[in-house]
Each structure stands twice: as C-alpha cells, then as structure tokens.
Length: 402
Image (cartoon, rainbow, N blue to C red):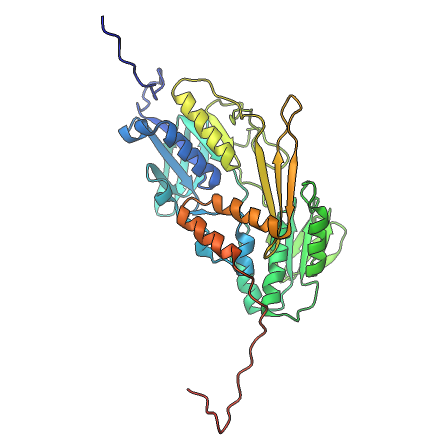
C-alpha cells in the first residue's frame, strides 16, 4: 500500500467563531524595526500561505516610511541627510497591506481595531493575531536643526529620562560649533530625570567628559516640571532659558482600548518569555528587532498549531552612544542565563567604538545599498568648523564678476 504523502502544516485554525472569515489575519501595529522584523519572520515561515491568500498580513503605521533608528543625532549634526533615514514601507513589505494611519480604538474582545486614516473614513480591521511594535517616538530634530541654523546662538533644552538625550545635546553643540566656532558655553541644557548613563555600565566617565568638553549644562536626576515660552523650570525651582525644548525620551503611545494590559514603569507592555501578552493570548508585543523577529516566529508557530518557544538564553545585546563624530562608546553584552552563565560585556571607546557603531547601525538598515551609503557617510572625515565667510571687497584691478 503506498505511503500517504506528507501534508504541509496548516496555517488555519481548526475552529473559528461563527461568521468569521476563513482567511487568517495577522495585524502588525507599527512600521518600525520591530514591526519589520516580525513581518519578515512570518513571511519566512508562512510564505506559501501568504502567497496563496490563506494568510493576510496588515501593517498599521503612522508614517508611510520606515525610519532608520539611532541616526537622529548624525542628521542633527549635519553628517547625514533625512533621506538616509527613510524607506517606503510598501517597498519593504510588498506582501502586506500597509495602512498609513493610527489606531483610534482597540477591541480586544471582538479582535478588531478601528483605524483612522487621513484620506479615508474610520474602518474596523479584524485580526486573529495582533503584534504591537512598541517604540518611543523619535525626537523631532527638524525644527531643532532649522532653529540652530536661522537663530544662532540658540538656547536649547533637552529633556531626558534615561540617557537618550545625551546624543541630541552633544549633536546640537556640534552643529552650533560648525556654524559658529566662537559660541559661548551653556547654550545647550540637558535635564535628565534619571542617570546620564541610563544604567549602562562603563560609559559614565566618557559621557560626562564629553558633555563637559562640549559645554553642555547637564543636570542629572533633575526633572522638568513646567515648560513655558523662553524658559523651563525644573523640580528645584531653577529656571533655564530655552528657545527650543526637545523631549528625547517620550513614553510609547498607549493604544486606546489597551489601557488594561499590564505595563512596566516606562510604559512598555509586560510579556512572558515568548513575547506574548499574558491576557489575551493572541496579542504579542516587541520593542527591538530581535524581539519582533521572535514574536513573528511564535505567531507562525501558533498558526501551525505548535507551541510557542521562549527567547533563547545567551543572547548578545549591543548599545552604542554617539559622543562626537568619530567618537562613540559601544557596549556589547552577553545576557546572563538562568543557570548563572553569561553576563560578560565588552566596551569599545573612541574610534574603535565609532567603527562598531557604524557596523551596528548600517546592519539595521533594510537594503544593502542603504547600508553602504550610510556607512560611507559615517566614516567620512568630519568637516572643519567654518565661520561665516565675509564677502570679498571689490577692487579696481580685480573686478568681481556679476
């Protein structure tokens, strides 16, 4: 008797509520690095189901572009342009329906989201699995760069919570230094409600030295309580002059309808080891690309009726802090395992840290051409500070062409 041919794992649940579509729907909220990693992991595991129409992927993003993370300070300092950071999401996610808008309401019981778009009336979008790509919104450096260029010298106040504003404060000083080399110190103020190092070991000395050398008025463990026109008042009652205030550590937005889900002190959703939110069981959350890829793989396992796997032990994490052009602190850390292993770290400083930072940020970009373009821009020598060049006077023996 011939053997029964093997069948591929099904990507459809065996039981569905009455009236629900036979197509499995996965919705990813957020088109950042974690959302892109989740999309690619699902497509890699269930590509045939996506192409056949059994599985439908939808991505909800507030912007039509994927924005490269970690490069805002380089753009503010003038070493990169905004075009280096943006890639159309529809080009990166051709197998998904990309909806540019925001989630106005989440109904987790009925498994649907109300999506509000600028060019359409609000509509409800159902889901079988929901992946929430959580990320703190990037500081809008566009107004800051324009302000520094048109109104210099300018008083800038950066509000920080865990060290994320160190890069922006130093980049603002660098931009002013390039356009006005004789500027006085103290035009950039950094108010950090936590530690300047953000709890990262081994970076305290170079960070404080870089802030002091750049003339940044850094106030650690100081929280801003009131922001008014032209000044910022901190918790101790001190007033700081400010032409422009930038918030570098804004909390991740909370989707309406998900307020009851458990969160940590920084506003991020709490998950188990599989990146699943404890209740309900079909909602997943991720902050980093590695977490997004793992959540995507577990969604694919759930669609194939397999058990979700926890995040493997012994993973490396990397964090880099930009201090100046060709000066960075990069920390590579092996996370400890439950058995007590791991916990090692490697800290690279100066030019070596800058090379490691360039490799890390370039590798996070979605296309090889963009990786090469950004890497070459970051490895370019820093331009010398140029003051405003006076107009050459007209002379009788050397006429100035008109």
